[in-house]
Image 1 (cartoon, rainbow, N blue to C red):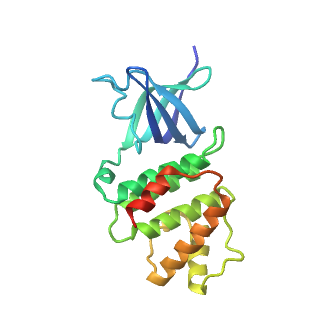
Image 2: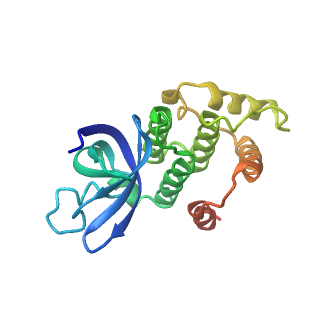
Image 3: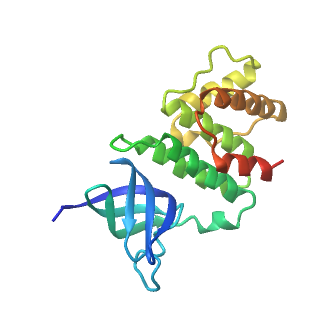
Length: 215
């Protein structure tokens, strides 16, 4: 029998399997992005039911199978239930999960991505920061972590260039501590969209839905 392992992570997506199971994609610090099966998670009274949903964050105890992991226990830190009542915050949240899934890889240290995702979702619950700014900070920093963002050559004002440089280099806990002028936000929107159009090799459905919601 395989040895149990416990990882820290967040559920990025779920899908039903068979009559009572779920397949979860989890971004973990220790193992990167992994797939795991939660047996019986859709069955009433299952101890895995509440933990087998997107946004759930905590510790997950797993047993490695032949082609995936099996989830056997959880210790939940946060369910992000408040985000489900935020409009359009919940759409931003699902997009953040989807973008993390886009970059997630198995057997790659996911600590920085996981911490960024967690802090970004928490920021969506803070009314003093515009969701549009949170989105651009998250996108720029996530692309930076994965080596796909650089400010060089971007035609933006000195103020916007300073903001982008700060997003790239600031400690994660300092990212969501500022606001910007409308003209800076407009430049951030334009240059980030232009950059993402060049690097994304497939469309993200959650991104399209979010853009439709916030028009």
